[in-house]
Image 1 (cartoon, one colour):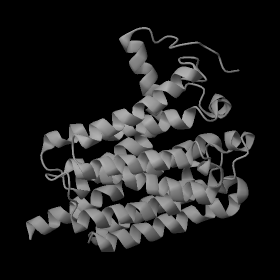
Image 2 (cartoon, one colour):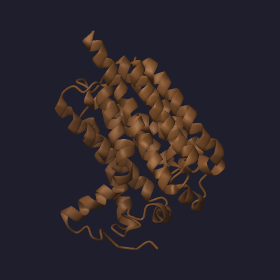
Image 3 (cartoon, one colour):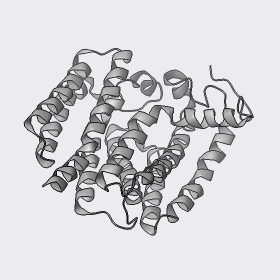
Image 4 (cartoon, one colour):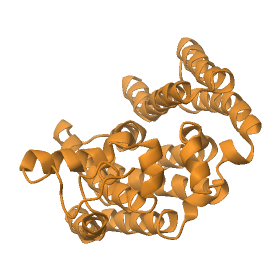
Length: 294
């Protein structure tokens, strides 16, 4: 049962507060913070090494805004699926988490406008799609969830890419292409995250692909990841050896989703999927490096 608290339980110190903030975003570090940071640095490309810090900070702050919004919606689901999160663990009350959630919106906009108006528009778009996903319940059906999630990730990527580049008002053709491809990849494969959360999603009445069509959902991962691996190998001009390695990795992940169906196995498979995602996000940078060498 979820423990109730009236304020920041266990968070009356700076360290306790930072732990609470970390626990809000912990599960999305591998799914969002790392892959999108890699894509931003690769797509821009990174202007100077020190630009990585504002990129990570901007993505982290917006991720925290999204996660607090998400976690105040279905506390009981988190008590089932992720009991260490701040609300079910009793580290923060629902009212204080709600204040934090809405207080982060102007904070995100202020930090964004310091970079450029273009970054601010990315932040505003991300806040809009956060509301569509969470407060307006866009996550309850697999179709709207996939669409809103993909566009939301694109907003993350656009903002991060603007900041990573030397001109925070401009993204070149390669950067725009890499973001468009990443958005399409997310839209067609993001259901991989839902298998590990199927039990909690059933309790809250969500209509995710693993619930609506589990066999098709699992069977789709292998061909989708394989096709994307082959297509991106041609787009970014990988060597045959790299293409084969990427394809083998995608087959391993797809095979695991198809054959290994326990919650623990799905968690591991999803971790591998995020590793694959990070690899394909490096590819625009790989292409730029090849062009530079010519």
